[in-house]
Length: 156
Image 1 (cartoon, rainbow, N blue to C red):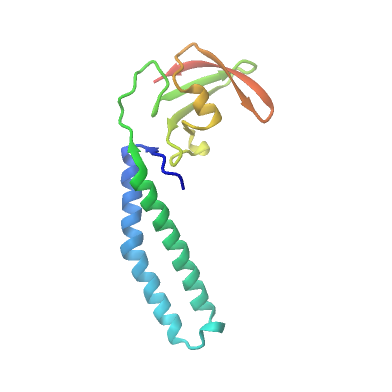
Image 2 (tube, rainbow, N blue to C red; image 1 turned 90 degrees about the horizontal axis):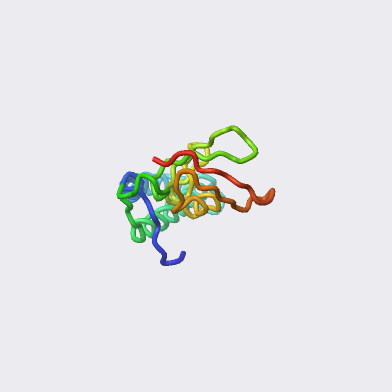
């Protein structure tokens, strides 16, 4: 992992810290108990429960490592945005030039991005194309289907 900052909201930061604490305390204890039980069943080389517990332990430790790194590199962005300029945590409505449909996205950090929830990473192709733009601006960005032109209808 690179040493670059991870931009997150306070809410996402708190969520990561809570998950990390739960994994380090509750989950590690559960896994240790499962391993102890599986060891008591005998031959470890043919013990499916033991192997499963070890795999779960490895996955949990990897998640802990990732969360510790994310929390360490986190840059919490507060709501200090300008209302009329697209920035982190802006809600943006855009319209494709060839369509009457409006699409609304919230600009978030990459750890919070979720297209199903219309949360767009500020470093994604569309997100980075939107950053710094204002209502009424027309912009073009590259998609797998070629260049697309959009107009910003609303920034809040």
